[in-house]
Length: 183
Image 1 (tube, rainbow, N blue to C red):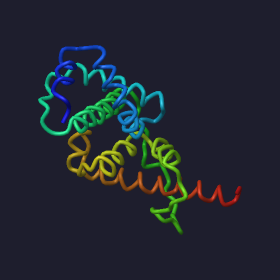
Image 2 (tube, rainbow, N blue to C red):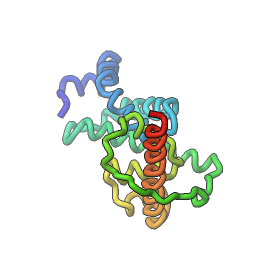
Image 3 (cartoon, rainbow, N blue to C red):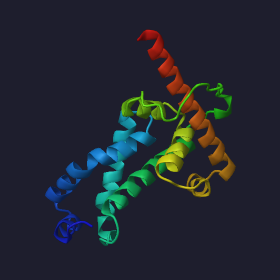
Image 4 (cartoon, one colour):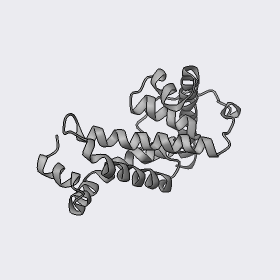
């Protein structure tokens, strides 16, 4: 729950309240945007668009439920909108051409990776894989919901998630092997 007085200031469009909200939540929301974006610049654009929506639609928030959850949902929906917009304007790569290698001796719980390395590996995924991976593995959506959100078949969601996982495993294994060879 957010303080009623502060919420009232936000709903009136008080610039100081907006700045306070931005300062408090931007770092956390930027982290969410980074998971969906292919670069820091793209994440910044998603975050900026999300805050425009937050300030535009703050009047609709009735202070029931989680305010942070409401903010997170706006960022995720903004990232999804960004994904859809790019699909309409950009040639979609044929992701089936990406070869998956056998991943041997890989543990998903390997503590050798920093959060930054994992984030970079996720960001390096093709946009479709990255979006499905984030929605399923991080946000907790079901494949049926993802299919509806993205306008794809449920089986496409499942296969893109599977391929995203395999590709992430491959990238992390390559990083691990590089480290072991180069100290």
